[in-house]
Image (cartoon, rainbow, N blue to C red; front, side, top):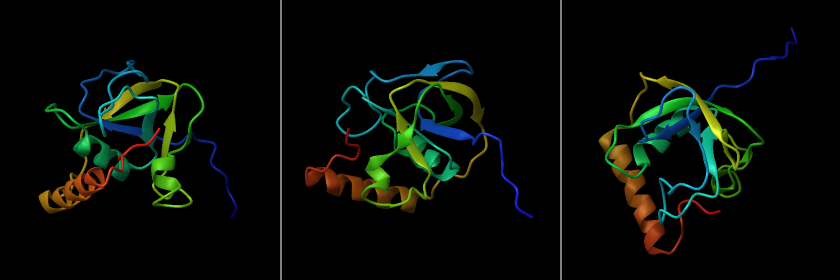
Length: 137
């Protein structure tokens, strides 16, 4: 049987920001990653796994959070991942210059192990020492 889904995908945004349903996530704030510049893009994913990394690796001391979000404008493949690391976008990671509306919070999700987090942070630190930005605009 050949069926097509008309349901919109669920998108996630991982962060340490404390947001409420209806809030907008917008560009122009300090980035959660890299050199903490003003963000030219905001990021979302159609996979909980990618959002989990986003929540766990975000700067700050706040609680790690994953929100469901709805894009308010165009989204594009995240070139930080798709052009370099995962051709074809298997992580379903995207970016936009248009706000995302928070539609809810995922309260139960599986965190990565301390070993996995250390490996990822060590890798990101090595890239930083090489002058490679984790997120490129």
